[in-house]
Amino acid sequence: MSNFFEALANLISWLSKIFKPKEEPKPQVKQIIAVPWDTVVAELKGLGLVLINKDGFQPDYYIQYVDEEDWQKLAPFLTFSGEYYVLGIEPLPDCDDYAKKASVEAAFKFHVSCLETWGDTPYGRHAFSLVKVGEKAYRIFEPNAGFEEAGELFKFGEYRPDCWRL
Image (cartoon, rainbow, N blue to C red; front, side, top):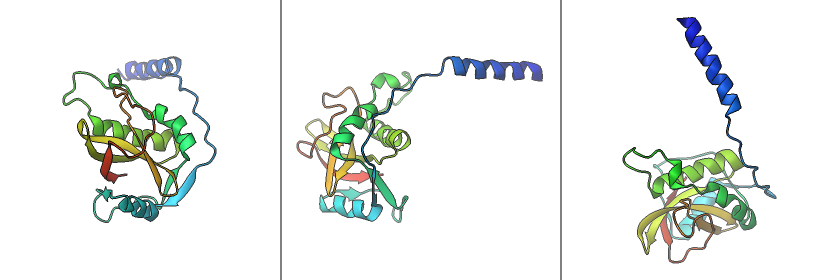
């Protein structure tokens, strides 16, 4: 019986090499800049955003970011179709899940920090992705491809976040 499982494992390994999904080439960024966590917390507090991480939460000392031009290149790679998720699983993913996925993918694929943020919009309460683009400068993007603004950076406006987390 162990020969069967060994053969099955070998077959799965072989098939995974043949059917391995090809990754799209990553956009090139000019420079990744590191800024201390405390600086980001202070800047966002100055913009009226409340940090909603657990008390005493201290991530790695630095948050990494790129300039606005480079974020314009990265945001489409951090925008996901609703079809990405397996249908039939309840509850269905919502805006929080998209913002969280964008945060994780930004860290793994591009080695930059993408924050989750929430606020009131003309559509009601909503989560977006929040990115640092320069000194005291932040932009928001919608990581759900089902929205008209998906994958594009925009300034605080109709959507005004009031809280955030890493």
